[in-house]
Amino acid sequence: MPDALRVIVAEDEPYNRKRIARLLREAGCVVVAELPDGPAVFEWLEAGGQADAAFLDIEMPGATGLEVALDLPSSLPVVFVTAFAEHAVRAFEAAALDYLLKPATPERIAIALARVRERRTGSPSAKRPAAPLRYPVRAGEGLVFMELARTSHFLVEDEVVWAFVGGERHRTTWKSLTEAEASFPRDVLVKGHRNMLLRPEAVLSIKASDYGRASVRLQGGLTVEVSRGAAPGLKARLGLA
Image 1 (cartoon, rainbow, N blue to C red):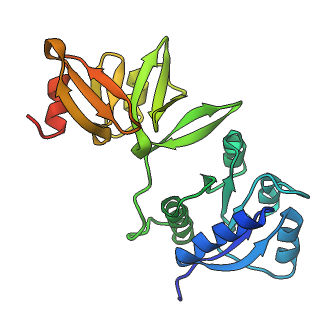
Image 2: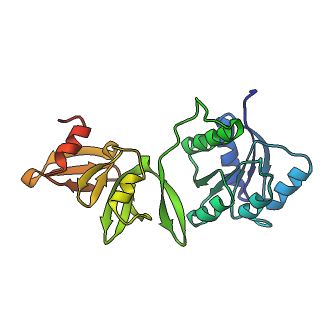
Image 3: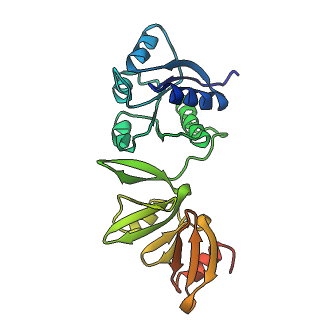
């Protein structure tokens, strides 16, 4: 496979290491090294190892993935794969190309690999998956990035905008719906009422409610009420008007 990316995987847990390596191979990569810790990465490089990208766990013995990344050649893109969302800010400070939360999915791996290919060519790849629209939410003392495609709606309460993903809410960095709406392309979100924005694609069902309002069931199992003023706009986006 002449265009296959050559990648290394560093992960101290054997099961996770094998799983990431398998997903990368299934995505068309050549896994040139599967390494158990940070020092093993340095030994591999010193022995003349070469790769197009490094997929690193963060919590590893000997040297963390963050420490390894800081000492890697700048020409070697780094993708972190970790179970700890609180490392997100430090990961991007270490110039990570991407940051995957375990368990990484094939779809998310594909996006990371598309970014590696874009870095190599210096221009977007015509065949790469569309990069997801993402936004930050708070996680401990740091931030983690959520994908809009998994988000059902946003709700503002007391100058805090909450994002709802899989039925659970996450605190964003925004203080108003105006800020949230301005962070995405126009018309991606629609008003649910003065304190709520909806992603139309997340709507599973809609039915009439009292006084011209609408009851809407969303991905994640939540049901919300859309105001009388906002209901016509939502119905139009759903092709119902």
